[in-house]
Amino acid sequence: MVDRGEEPLGSARLELVGGVALLHPEDAVLKAMLSGRAKQQLGGRRLLPKTINDRESVIRRLILFCDKYPWHWMASDVDEFMATLIGEERKAKSTIRSYQVALRQFCNYITSPHYRWVEICEERFGTHPTQVCHE
Image 1 (tube, rainbow, N blue to C red):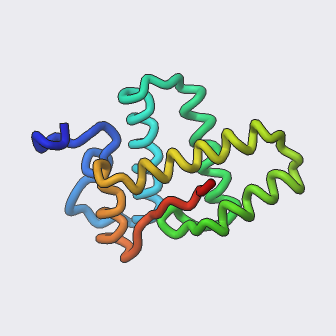
Image 2 (cartoon, rainbow, N blue to C red):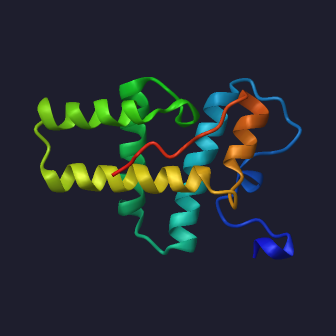
C-alpha cells in the first residue's frame, strides 16, 4: 500500500487537510488522531464499534488525567494514571491490563511512520508522540 504512494487508512494525511491554518490546532490534531485510529481499527482490523469506543475512552481518560495531548505524554503519566486506577479506583487486574493494551496500541499507531503522526506533530508543535506504555 504505502510503497505505491497510497496512504493507509487512518493516516494523518487523510485525516488532516494540508495547508490550512487551524484555529485550535492541538484539538484538531487530537480529533484527527482519534478519528484515524477508529477508521484504522474498523476498516483495517475489523474491530467492533464497542471495542473501538472502549479503547478511545481509555485514551480520553489519560488525556483528562494528565491534562496533556498525546504528543506530550511521558511514561510517568501512564504510571501515575495506572497507580490511580489501582489505588483509588480499585480497578481489577484485567481492566488495568486492557487499559495498558489500549494505550500501547494507540501509541504504536501514532508513532508508526506509516501513519505520519510523528511528522505532523513535529511540523505543527515541534515535538512528537512516543511510546509511553511499557512493560
